[in-house]
Image (spheres, helix red, strand yellow):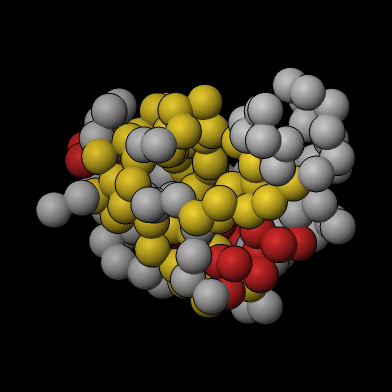
Length: 146
């Protein structure tokens, strides 16, 4: 097992996602075919709806709601043991309910993964994206909407 925190694996299709997060933007890949325009995540080379290879990256509001969550007990990797209990949440994007992103609910960008009391996690709670520099990446994290 690894003693380090997990980091994203970047491939050609997903690289723009990470380039935009580094700029503080949440963008989702969309089909650029004018007859389709479907959003898709995870990013891939071909639209699963119309099979077009044309794509673009659309800026999202960063608003969503907690669709699901888990509190891992015990942590799967030693590097996470000090942070337990921490959360992993699935966020349904407000403008794209079929798009769901995995992340952590924190009190502010870059706060520890255990910074939110687990009792505050509620399915349907409204959240807003924030961005934190973690190592070589800028990761999207989530805070409760105020």
